[in-house]
Image (cartoon, rainbow, N blue to C red; front, side):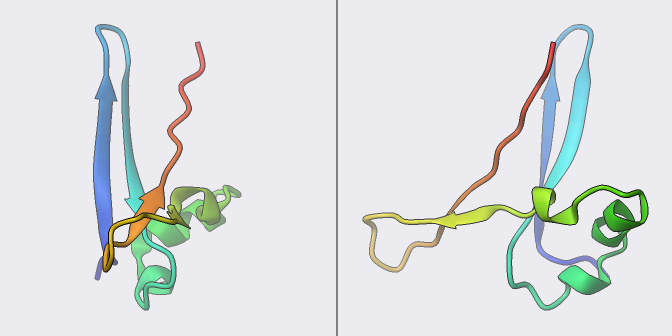
Length: 71
């Protein structure tokens, strides 16, 4: 079973980055196969979880998620 997530696909002529963003405090985060393999590969799964941020819109949840491309 998968937890809530969003797919990102960043491309140019010579490169493709496919990644997924996960949400904090989701009940299924600990059971998501792909998210749990990050820890098994010695990567920080917390880096794939977006960070809550504030917004001026009432009732709207806002998050930030950094995608870093090195050249």
